[in-house]
Amino acid sequence: MKDKIVTRFPPSPTGLLHIGSLRTALFNYYYAKQNGGEMTFRLEDTNREKWKKEYEENIIESMDFFFGMKIAAPMKASERGEIYKKYILKLVEDGKAYVSKEEPAEEGKRSEVIRFKNPNSKIKFNDLILGDIEVDTTDLGDFVIAKDLDHVLYHPQVVIDDFETGVTHVIRGQDHITNTPRQILIQEAMGAPRPFYAHIPLILAPDRTKLSKRHEATSVSEYLAQGYLPEALINFLSLIGWNPGDEREIFSIGELITEFRLEKVHKNGAIFDVQKLNWMNKEYVKRLSEPKLLEYSLKFLPDTVKGISGFSVETFKKLLPIIQDRISKFSEIEEMAASGDFDYFFGKPIYDPGMIKTKEFIPDLISIIGQIREENFNAPAIKLKIWDFATEKGRGSVLGPMRIALSGKEKSPDPFTLAEILGKGETIARLRAAIT
RNA sequence: GGCCCUAUCGUCUAACGGUUAGGACGAAGCCUUCUCAAGGCUCAAAUCAGAGUUCGAUUCUCUGUAGGGUCACCA
Image (tube, rainbow, N blue to C red; front, side, top):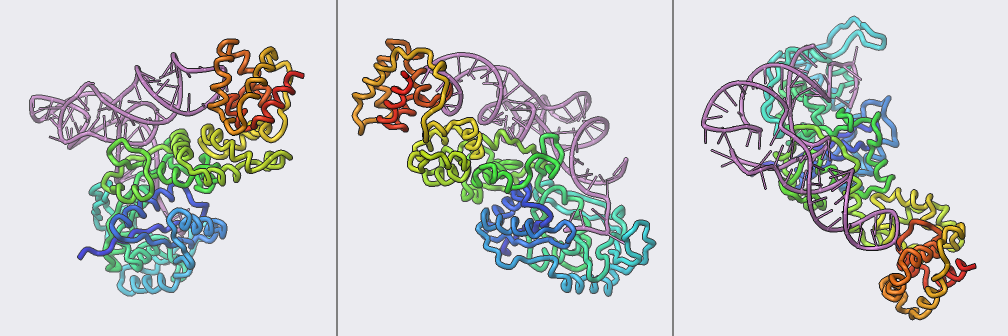
């Protein structure tokens, strides 16, 4: 009988959920799920200086948002002081740790701390991604594991929490690799079993250093706020440092759970390429259902547009295909709004009449369009009716003025689509207005 | 600097020791076209260097070089 696989995600609430943390959580989640196991969650929240309630809430909400984990009462390191204390006490009793008198060299340092008695052994462990790693722990010295019995430090905390929650696989970033020998040492002193380790490569900024706060946008919330879709973010992040070995790129979370292979995770760090994220997000935008597309579009549509007197959701719905075609992320709707790409749908276009090169063919357009029946007033039908005439007279001098008459802009969707959205009556009205 | 990790197009990456070193993003060009997008097609672009093992190294070994991570009484 194989033991149930238990992975872990223990973020520290010292910032909003980081893009790299999400990816680590994702890998932990895939590995646990595909093996019928589970991913545990706990908050490593003993650093009270950097802690913020806002961060904690953001992380917990994200767990629900991305993994459907409803966490009512998260396990918190800050509430486990008594437990840590017992273990440290035991270590001291067993002679594996000792109270050390110090001469504080710096301000704020204590004259007495608890140090781990380093047996100075060579620690060898097999990393599921990196392979065998051997480290001589002599250079680590007798490192401090607690300031005192009520202030236990990170390494013993991790070992105790992983042990008590039955963690079988520690999947974490490569920035933790040098912590591993220390933690194994403590484990062995406590007689705790050693979990499997898998250190995943770091996500790098374009300057090839670890992606951190000093770089552009690093929190998941920022990306969501820019209108990246969660599914796209998950897909993109999952493909950094891992790939299925073939040429597929678009994966649902369900597919990722079955396809993900820990053994195929790379050893080397990878740059977070926003351009590729943009492309992938666009792929997801294209696949969005109409209700979802409307929901997101409305959410990102500025109030200045919603406040136009002629604005209605009914009309806005007709613009959805145009939006879907143009944006790669939803914040671009704000840019479209700023350049006036929506205004003319909800009110008369404002433009310099000089923009219209020639009004010569507008009366003909009005009569052609007038012949189209109301119920047939759609872009393909309108195009069919006008096309030959436009070709005969010169498309530039027929279609160009038509577009400007309808939109007031040099750049816009094609005039047939414009006419369809505006409707027959309004189209003719705007063409008439352009003559005078 | 010590310790640890890594090394294929600009970027993400594929390639039982035998391939014209493949794909994607991005760039460029072309087509489509009334504009802007979208779409289609085409093209450029890489095995860090040097030894060794081998009939044959992107692939295995060593050295060098480069990059990264980490060295708290933070987590």
